[in-house]
Amino acid sequence: MTLSVLLVDDHPIVRAGLRTVLDSAVGARVVGEAATGEEAIEAADVLRPDVVLCDLRLGDGIDGIETTARLRELRSAPAVLILTTSDRDVDVLRAIEAGAAGYLLKDAPTGTILAGIADAAAGRTVIAPELRVRAERAAPAARLTERELEVLALLAEGRSNREIARRLFVSESTVKTHVVHLLAKLGADSRGRAAAVARERGLLE
Image 1: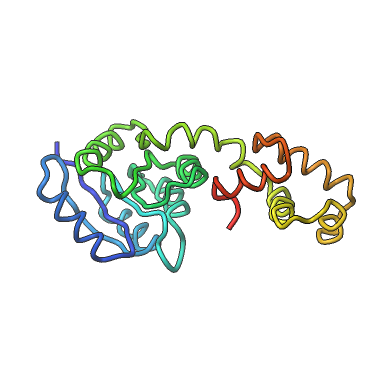
Image 2: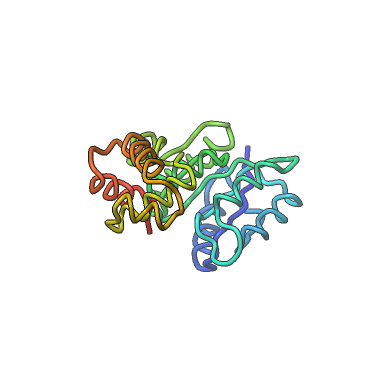
């Protein structure tokens, strides 16, 4: 069976390269292309591809995470396979939680990408081996609340609990509680280590 694929990437040269690879492969056929998340959703609704091969960063408009979530809400929801350059733990986890069938890096061998498309269409989860363990490890950190992320950002700047409390207009005891939760979720034993882990996992810019 030949699987229909929609390519979503904001770089024309990347789409052209992927089209060349897929059109010459057995078992896959490119039925459309999109440069933005919004275009991808419209195209998928009309073309009804089996698999959408989608980048994570799509320039202006919605990103690959939001695109994935909205694609999965379509009546004939396609499987979504993320193909990107980002190897951040938190990005992998967010993509899977948004409904992506898998997550591969753009430097993956052609055979791996083709196998990933087939697995995604079959309902199997596809994650690059080097990212799987890291994504599982990042799960608790990805569930930080908005307030915890605010505290984390200030903590990473070296702010004291008192300074953070003043900045966020909350009590010092509230800040202490947030810090305790942050250390637990990040698996860190100090404020400095928490900031380092957060940077490693893409939680801080």
